[in-house]
Amino acid sequence: QQQVKQSPQSLIVQKGGISIINCAYENTAFDYFPWYQQFPGKGPALLIAIRPDVSEKKEGRFTISFNKSAKQFSLHIMDSQPGDSATYFCAPSGTGNQFYFGTGTSLTVIP
Amino acid sequence: ETGVTQSPTHLIKTRGQQVTLRCSSQSGHNTVSWYQQALGQGPQFIFQYYREEENGRGNFPPRFSGLQFPNYSSELNVNALELDDSALYLCASSYYAGTGASYEQYFGPGTRLTVT
Image (tube, rainbow over all chains, first blue to last red; front, side, top):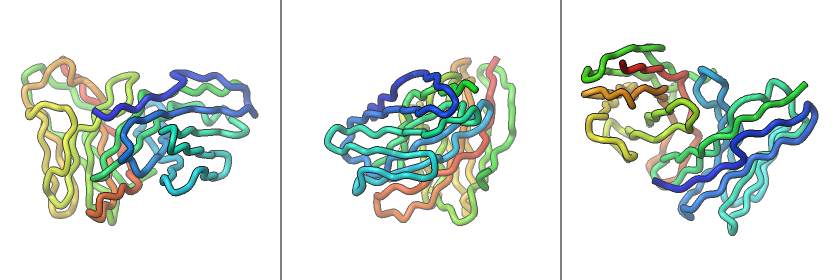
């Protein structure tokens, strides 16, 4: 199995704060780096993704930062809201369109 | 909401039985992947189907098998159910050009399987 390590395991942030979740991987053949958001009882939903030819991508309050040399990428949630409370997964993908999920980060945003 | 649908929503089976789970892909997608998500864990890749053939498999035994149909819908079959097979089974569809590069993958709501 491909090694994908995600941290922290859980995160508590005040409303309006910044949430940061990190993902480290080993396989240098990965070419697509998405983050998924999952609410209880639902399937994961694609949140934002980046390809290795750029170092940062921003969509609204969500930003991915990518460090190819360190084999790490992170998710930043600006102005965190209670509705952002969910479990977040990184899931890098490589040859053949196969995805390898991290262990997840449970985010709680306190009003 | 994505266009990926799964049935049934919930299922209870007895150890040793067989189960079939179904998935309909999002329109325009030609690839289906299946994942097992145990409680409190991330989804684990079972296998992927592209052009009706298995196109990669995770660390799951042969009693996990699948099919993809010409309309790109898919089935996951699990034989000789074990208690540890209790999990949320997720189907995800995507468009794959066959070039090796990865593309966006969209998940269905999952089927909750309980084995007693």
